[in-house]
Image 1 (cartoon, rainbow, N blue to C red):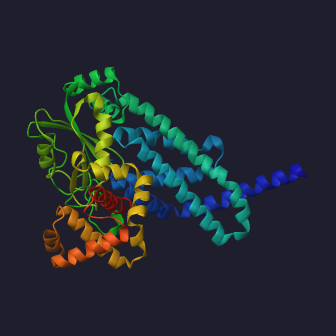
Image 2 (cartoon, one colour):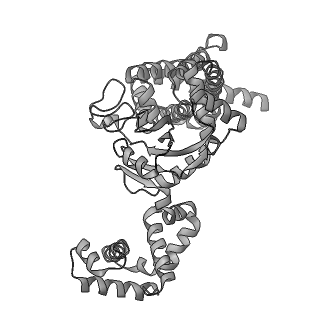
Amino acid sequence: MAVKRSEHVGEDVREVLRIAATRLLRQLPELTEELVARVREGDEAYRRFVTPDDHWQSTEEGLRAGIEAILQRPEERRDLEFARHMAGRRAEQGLPLESLMRMYRLAAQVTWAAFVDLIEREHPELLPALVRTATHVWHAIDRQALMAADVYRRREKELLGRSTERVNALLDELLEGAADGAVARSAAAALDLPERGRYAVVTIRLPVRHDHEGARVNGNGAPSGYGGYGGPARDARPETLGAMRLLWRMRAQYEVAVVALGEATLDELAEGMTAVVYGPAGVSPVVGGLVELAAARRLAELAMRTCEGCGPEIARLDRRLPSALVISQPELSGRLVSEVLGALQGLDPTDREVLLATLSAWLRCEGSAARAAGQLYCHRNTVFNRMRRLEQLTGRSLSRPRDIVELALALDASRLLS
């Protein structure tokens, strides 16, 4: 009986896969549309390196090969061959491997969701058998992803023989902290930069852009009026700012500029970057050599995370240290908010926001109620009354420096961690 039951289950699985695959091939345009939209909506690298037409055609072909493989004998399948071909092509286009792997994860989600919807709608009696197909479907896509990753890495290694790709690889090693003294010396020679010198790192968060919301799209997948990297049409990715030299690298969520400062100051760098940034940006402190770029990148990212909103803003870490401290210790910062501002949670939200806005203005104005009143468009006595009420609710006194520090840090934490 056990053998017969095993054979029956195997037949069930094959049947439900056959039915689902046959139906899904008829829905290929809709599946392609969904997968392309999800990939391009969440990944600036795809929008930058892969044209919409190329992306659509390759996605449609890949989904077709993957679904047809369910209906074919192993020797007839071409899904792995397609994955091999496409991975090499994406490596040549410069698409990051993490973007390619994210595409495979989304492909698995879209395909499996379509399987479930179809069987649930047309053959609900097969749902138990469908559950047993899950391992088959996900394993097939995993095999494609593993094949793609292996081919991508091998092709990328081949491409590194070219000078530009080699320079970028060396720069990535420096930025990711995988560099030692030998790599730093190689990078210095390849980049024509001093191994020891004054450097800073700038990170710029990439904008979120939705292709399907009616924006006009130019030839490289960016809206008209935007730079090729998805930001406003400014002086995009300059190689120099005055006497400073900039080297750019792309990450999944932000761009990185390595800046050889020479004798320039961070003030000059920040001023020069105002014509470049298209969103929140972070500037690291000055470091003393190429081998320290990974630390500088992490500090620039931390500074970038202190920015509010999505508009252009340049945050220098040396001027955002309290906020950076809050960001880097989220658990303790959450406790600080609870301890210092917890009593405000019971207030009406509008009332609470008025008190917090008044505290923020008072701190910006260095404790001047008159100047804060000017910013808040109210009478200075109103500011005094609100601040007294805040003291009563929090149990902190604005005449004690330590209490002011706690209030300022708690305010930052509530703003940055919400």
